[in-house]
Length: 311
Image 1: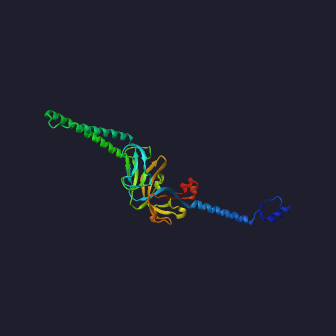
Image 2: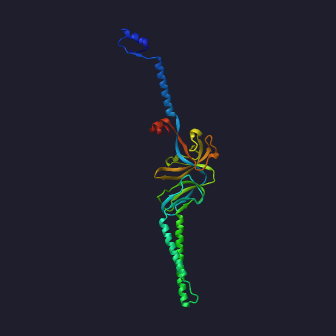
Image 3: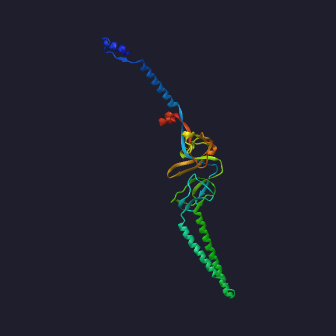
């Protein structure tokens, strides 16, 4: 029969011929205590993994900009983009050039229309009536002059129309503000009516506008807290600011090089340490973190348990 004894007793049992052949277990009291501690730690870890919930957050890039409704600039014509003159986040003034379409073919048409207009004007001047012309000749000349005036009017209308169309190939900012987004690139083809850019009017209170992946939109809500880490004020030295979601866009934006996203407006509530309201300016970048929910550690380590534990 197995017995639990100490090392000294085990040696005596080994020397005793009557104890030979029996199983002897040797264990120190400290080993028993160590095993009890390990068992307690295992139980505590299991309890933490199963019961403790940790926040699950998403991140998104954002920009500080004035508050206001975004103004959409749309393509006036269908043409190829020759040059993009601005970038997202840049401040623009009234009539600032945003982009230019390719206008080589249209400029050639304008030159032809201008030459035709000059020719029609010259022909009209050559039809001046002599002072003492016969009545029959005068009526014929007046009829010719009337027809020439019609041709001149058509030539002038064509020339002015082409010049107006040429001016539309240079897209300018209709107001002063911050360029929120530019949806064009050099060499790309844009169809008439497509959105080219979004401009936020200047002069309002500063807010944060960030974009997050559209797949998380159903978990976003107005009033949720946003942790703000400014690019110009690193969080390891200045800390983290705080904001609240004010508006969630219904529109989903998608491009070829990024996942679909939605725009979120964030009201700045608390600033990082050492940063005050006057330190903010339009165009500053930041990273926003939004806590969507809290999950148990066990469901994060073993995703199949999520439905069971995080219902």
